[in-house]
Length: 284
Image (cartoon, rainbow, N blue to C red; front, side):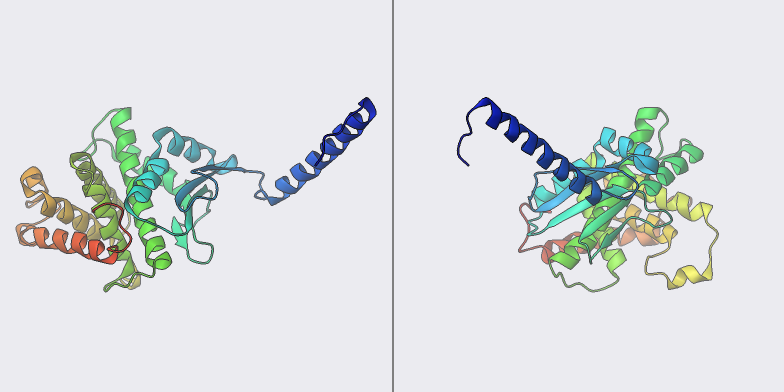
């Protein structure tokens, strides 16, 4: 476009630009969610890999503020992108999901990270109070909840990677996704081991608060109590010298299960290393 000159011409141009801006704004508003929530993203526009989209306002506001303050999903996305090459864009979309749980949607290629799930985890730990893996104090409690939500992020990202990268595996996908989350957490060293223990604690609390129903045996997920034991087993198997308290009569693991945990951990880690051989930016 050439340069316009003259007072009248500039005035007409200003009016035209204002009208165009108004039209663009109207179109952008129409594309937003029906409840008027705004969407903001963490990550470069148009970049591949994992990014975070926040839908603020309404029922998701409190959970969104918490996730942002703790940088839970932002840090998880950064770690995933530093570890795995993904040729597509995979957004974590923070929103209100109603009764639904966090999940990867293969049709849209997005991970719904539900505000209700965030509230549920925070309420569960608040009601449970301090415990062996639940230190007291606001900061410690926030770190504990953040660890569980980070585990959820890695679990759902595993489903996304399996779908988007066409990964082939054996066993149940939900169990394989748990193993990926354990590998990403425990790979962070002592801090990550504490996070994996927090995940085990959360599953144990969920199992304790929900009466067993025979219909649970037909679910694609393992039982919450089993998932608690599995995470404890991976942590113990990775570093038994640092987690002897996980084994015992009233602990997460009995001696018989603990004996095989080193092999279980090696299989989980080695399996995901093999699955992602062509896609890794750095070792798992």
